[in-house]
Image (cartoon, rainbow, N blue to C red; front, side, top):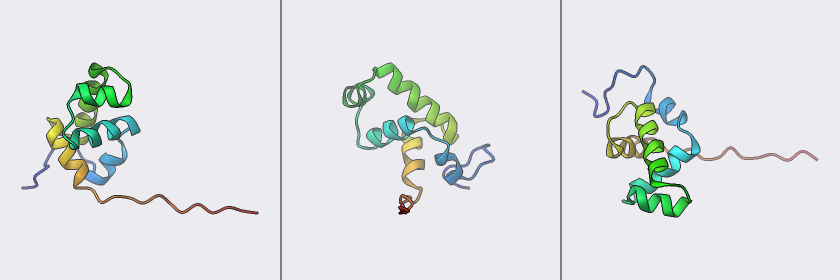
Length: 88
């Protein structure tokens, strides 16, 4: 049984792609051990808004806790930005 089994039909990599930038940012800061209040201070939003972003991220990822969401995000390979080409 997978550590992240869920009823969500999407592969984990597709799920993490569905996170908003703010959800991803809140999860990254939560992964550093910051509380919702500290995350809120750092990015300039309310603690309640941080909790909303984390709750929605959990829903997208098909997990129940922020710890599971952080683990799911951390398990994904990091993607590098596509190289930009500049046309003359």
